[in-house]
Length: 217
Image 1 (cartoon, rainbow, N blue to C red):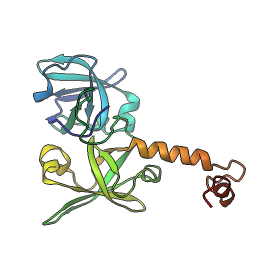
Image 2: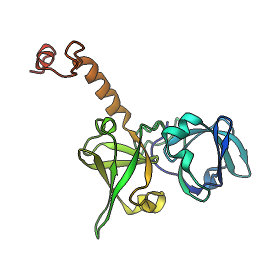
Image 3: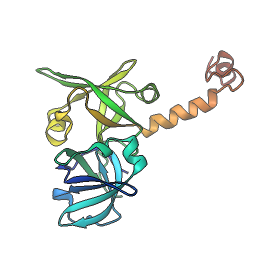
């Protein structure tokens, strides 16, 4: 489990094809000490297992499916990635629960750099947007952020100077792809409500009769 508080931003050393998918090499910088094969590290929001450690650089074997459903497969040498080690049992919980399981790949739709705020609008599919709410939490490339607005086809987050300085998100431009993970609490609530209100006969998840039967109306 991760918290969405980025520890290091590092440049990709290499990202090459392998029989199972991709082989990614990233120098870990100040967090390299103590990291060993088998440890989990969140790379741009994707939970990856360290296969090898050599002179402070971690090697990750990325499965083809992981590369397909995230941006990991498209990373290029020199591109900056966000890194976070798995949370220790006695660690402080400063962000929100981040699993490192990408729900969707979003697209940067707008970057607004005002005098008092920096707002990023991210286009996402309808299934993902069902699990995000105003003032709720979301992970963008592994960064724990608070949602400030949800629209029909996108949501927006407001970035503080510390986030811009200590992650790679300040370098995002319109059209860039980002890994998205919805809040696990929101996902579980949505799934449970869908189960309670599903109506297989009518093909609809929500009916007035179902609401009445469950005591909602």
